[in-house]
Amino acid sequence: MTTKKRYLRVTHLLFIVLLLIQLIPDKSTNPTFTGALIAFAAGLELIAFIASTFIKKEQGLALLLDIVGFIYVLLGVWSLATAKFNVLNPLLFPAPGEVIHQFAEDKQQILINIGSSLGTTLAGFLIAVAVAVPLGLFIGWSARIGSAATYITKFFSSIPPIVYIPYGIALLPTFKSVSVFVIFLATFWPVFAGTMSGVLGVDKRIIDSAKVLNVSKPEMLFSVILPASLQQIFLGCNQGLSVSFILLTSAEMIGARDGMGYYVKYYSDFGDYTRTITGLLVIGIVVIAVTFLFNKLQSHLLRWKR
Image 1 (cartoon, rainbow, N blue to C red):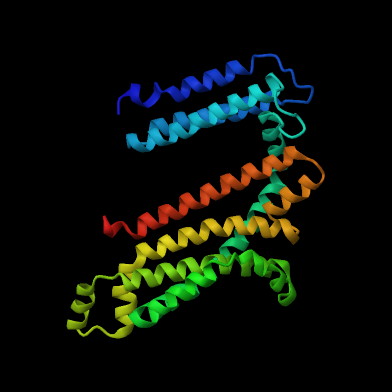
Image 2 (cartoon, rainbow, N blue to C red):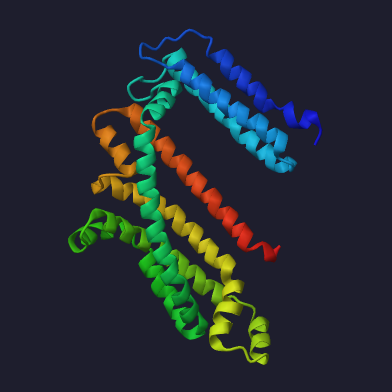
């Protein structure tokens, strides 16, 4: 890429526009912490310049800079509607600098809650995958049983896992175990259905070729059918992971004593909407980060399909 393509981008112009917006006098009577907003934007711009130097693929760089540019636009509009012209209710919609400042103040507490939420999600997700994938392979191996199990899966997957929380509270010792159980249910059915769909959709010629070579049943399942079904399995895992975060946040808002859902619920009960919005933004960022890493893992494991 040329220097112009690397460094002369609309994104950097949007950064300058965001800084110019901060020169407009504040009309909000609440502290707006403009310095925190400028520091955050400057850090983001530094990351963009470093990425422009080291990212080799133009498409990847363009995607990153587009995302950063969108953040600049969002922060600029948010500043105008809150701190600069006070269009929105300052109690419900704090200025972006105030939210950034609040995150810096609550950073340790937020990181602890993120760790708790991720730990719960990971435990339920891994248990569900460990159970659903082998079970889906064995059941999907029989076309007759697999076809019948497909309808049973559709029935149980149509029931929102969150309705099992009252039973979980009654049967399990801690709310943490209830949350893991809910994540397990949210992940199990999509992964199970995806595995069966992948097994039932394996090209018959691949199976016939393996039979000619006298491949044993375990080798057939785990060395032939499993790799051929990985794309559908990952599709189910993606669906389960997306639903898991939604359900975990909902579950934490009901009865947990930690986690990001608890953080949002606790402060919203006290009308602290600065922390509420901070928590909502953190949840969104964490979900995007986890999904991005999972997609990278999927691309790596399925690189042979390219």
